[in-house]
Image 1 (cartoon, rainbow, N blue to C red):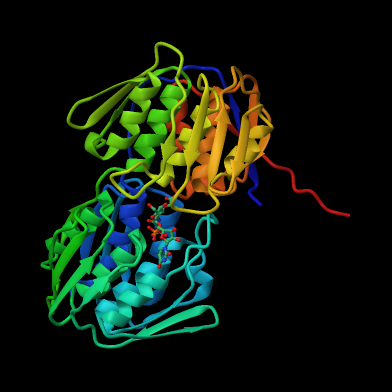
Image 2 (image 1 turned 90 degrees about the vertical axis):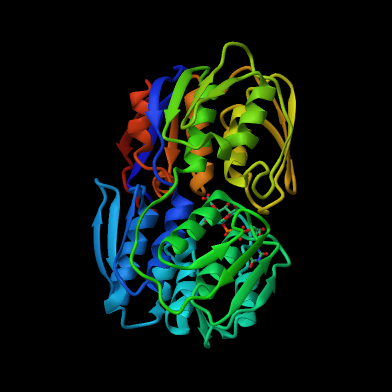
Length: 426
Ligand code: EPZ
């Protein structure tokens, strides 16, 4: 249990300018990819978040020399000292993206023993497509207790994903980058961080083509060299800040983002009556009148992202009319709405569909974050509500949002921490 809770007193329109940090889901793929290099690599614009700290711990355990400066948002990793292919469950369970060490170590040395990943409990999250790709590339894969064990010389192959998977696509790219021969990934994910990983691999001398389309072609290269690379800004943090600005009927400009990554959200906000304008690397969000209800269906990129469904559905609880939200990616991503019922939200949940009846007010209440984006949704809810909302387990939010409290405070939000007293059960 976290030792502190977040207190948010809502009703204050967010005003001013802020910036977006480097992407979480791209950083957690690019950092393990350094293991494929024969030389040190430097990654810049990293977010200073818990998931990055966990990756640093794992790399050091593997024997890599890591120089991480959170304030400078830069990491330099020298992989030459890596002397094991094992990531124990004790470390892997700390985050989802630990499974990228499977692809990265297989690509590096043809062998990987990695514990099952942890991460947000938002559904079953199987890894069958990752394992299918490793097997297609020539690995023998065994699941033993808490460990996934894969071994074999990587040989280029065709892999047709039965389901579009971000993690599976990334793991296959990592395993194939140094394989002998050509690999083609069909029905690949198209998220911006897939393109970013391809750009990073290519900056090390890899030959990856087609990232951002559903067919990725990789010509394996035996050696990859060092690189200095800057990761793209966080699409989901940008979206969360856009939603928070709309939710408080504020006027916020977010700098350092990529507006074209935000098109699905921007379209929905415009449909709600929110004003959204953009330049090359900034988005301004303003609300001048009431919000209309809208329907949302989550989809793979470029559709509406599941990671923004939670903050967006929090926003819809106060829209004029009924909204229908269909979550198609994960089975269990409405827990924040159950918490928000205590704040006055009117919601019916039927499997993966939520019917949200807009109310005119939400009221502050104690709520608990159950995962990263649920936490972000509850922050949005707290900012919109009358009175003070107490968010328990806010540590989830820190896993993915850099300095979120400071950023929101700089826009005028009343958000603060308070210690939670340890309670002894009788
Ligand atoms: C990534 O998760 C992100 N995580 C998630 O971010 C994000 O929600 C998700 O992609 C979708 O965009 C990281 O990048 C670390 P998937 P991932 O494989 O890779 C099913 C956040 O809040 N599937 O694209 O685990 C799976 O169950 C989060 O930042 C299989 O069936 O997602 C899901 O229904 C949480 N078999 C769907 O595919 C597989 O082998 C998409 O999952 C793999 C996935």
